[in-house]
Length: 287
Image (tube, rainbow, N blue to C red; front, side):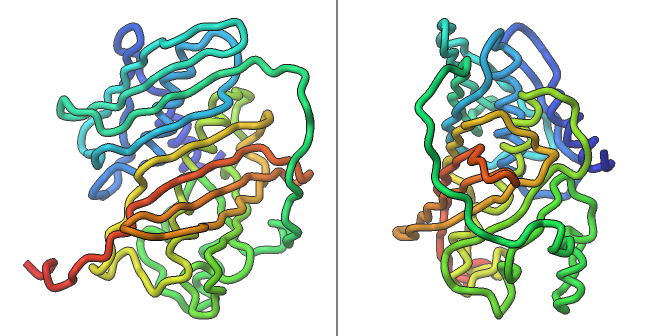
């Protein structure tokens, strides 16, 4: 397990404050706001720690306010329902006395089922693709401080990098992802690590057709809501193809859909995210 993955695992090991109340910490990084995937993953961990049977099969959530990375996050869990097959939890993340995020998560005991799924896209395997930092250097792109850091999730882009001038302008993106090391055999932890990783690149699928950069002062982007469906048992430390597309961007919002397939072609997770895609006047950012 890499040091960055080990730190993520510790970050997800939230502290129990009281019955149904947990506290989550932040990484020691210079950020203007908390990474949304971190809040979602910690909230799912809080929900899961109050569930006695079943595994998470879906979560629906809203990002309400930017998180403050300088103080801990309080997670309050509401035990809405404990059924024989399904268990439902609501989680509210709180900072400065206000809700910054809320999630509703459902847990299910797997049953005998109808069976079908969409086919996995035909792409090259992850072993044939260089790590992202090597590709950035080979392509002559600027290697900023973020790319030089070690990261808990190994990402291998299929095709051109999303900021490459040679990229396709189709609003679609495919990445092989996995945790950078071996994780303990805890299904909830694997689901939380995937939740963390799922928020890292969905917005990029919306931006690919446009000449937009996050740091150019003309664009404001943020996750608004995030929904996931966990179809099968999964391991976050094994390669999965993250297949993403954006069917629409309009009115200051963009929609992206993502699907995670394991190397055997099994569809494991589906997700949908809406993001803020606000065009701002750069002259207003001068002062």
